[in-house]
Amino acid sequence: MISAARVPSARKMAARLTTTVAQANQQTQGATKKMNDQEILNDTLKFHGHRCWASVAGVRVGLAALAALNAKRAGGTQLYAIIETGEEHGGMCFGDGVQYTTGCTFGKGNMRKNPLGKLAVTLIDKDGERAVRVSYKPTLQKQIAASSFMQQRSAGISPDEIAEADQMELVNLVWNAPESDVLTVGPVFDYPYNWLPEVMGFAKCDRCGELVAHAYRRVVGDQHLCIPCSGYDR
Image (cartoon, rainbow, N blue to C red; front, side, top):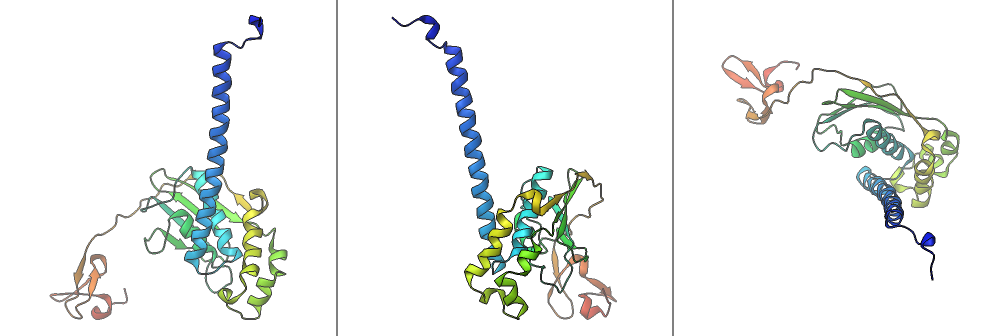
């Protein structure tokens, strides 16, 4: 005969089951997040055209910024990004990583450059009037500079012509590094701003006949012209 003291109560059994299910859900959510992040990385690299450390840094910075704001990728213009890369240097690929990850793009007009030559972004939640700045640390730069990929880039070889194994060496280096080693995530801060609404619609230039957004039409006499036809600078 089994002692009643050794038989778990229904309440205890239910509590154990609840704990087990919760742990399983947490593990599943963690695995799903890793899988989704990996998919984002893979899709970014396809979009970017080659595999490089700077685009991966952009993905990591973008993901960290979204997490800090508890925001999801913007399908519209709910978010706005200010990237600090500037022009004419080897780390501009960073911008594509930020664009694909956050949904802030130059095409949608919810991204702009503050040309400081840095691998950093300020991501703004427009409706929530909050923002965060995330930057990429120089921790891995000696390894990156000494890599076969960068040696070939310095020799003038186009990144998409470098062997995939050499490309993936740096992708994995940056992607697998602990966040605290490669990113500085600043505090979330208030960002109130008077955002201008989008001006919808196009019309034909009365002179050249090409479509022009309404905000870019200029009045010259009785004609509505595009900027080049109007003679105005802007």
